[in-house]
Length: 216
Image 1 (cartoon, one colour):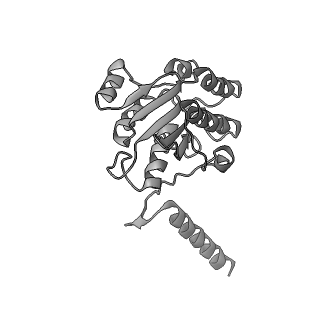
Image 2: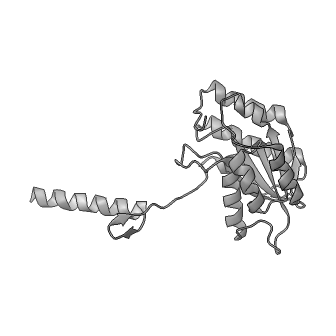
Image 3: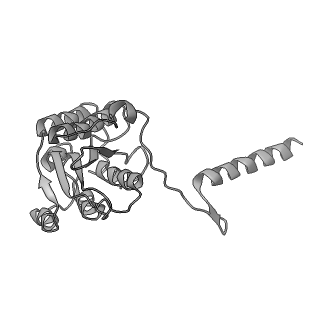
């Protein structure tokens, strides 16, 4: 009897693991990638406010980055996507590489994903949508800058520079002046070093907490 119960319990646990991990095919369990905000996000972000100035928009990105560090939920980077004219906040993103075990989950990438889910479009530049812009607490790495082209945003504003992130030994990848020239040639406006000192404070906070350098 005890052996039978034990076998059934093991079988139940295995079934539960399969349900949570993903569908099965020919005996193989396939993963499901689930991306969500940490619990603190609604206490940090005012979704109902209209953010009409660049400073206000950048401070959302910086606040998200700071909360991510203070709550120990990820790296010192935050991003936010707004409707350019109305100032409506569409989505935020925070670094979740370590929290969700996913190397692509930089703040900008998460912001793109969440914004596109919210507007139900794979591009934020769809004909039926208003123009959108990205504000990010730190200059985008090579991956995020590349994704910017396909995201559909028409403007990028960043705070801290890649040199500031490099001081913490973060690897920002192959970004060149030509990278920005290409985006600008495609009609994407770039605004640099907005509230850079405020953004750098978050990087220093992460350094002080001995935060994990996951791509150095």
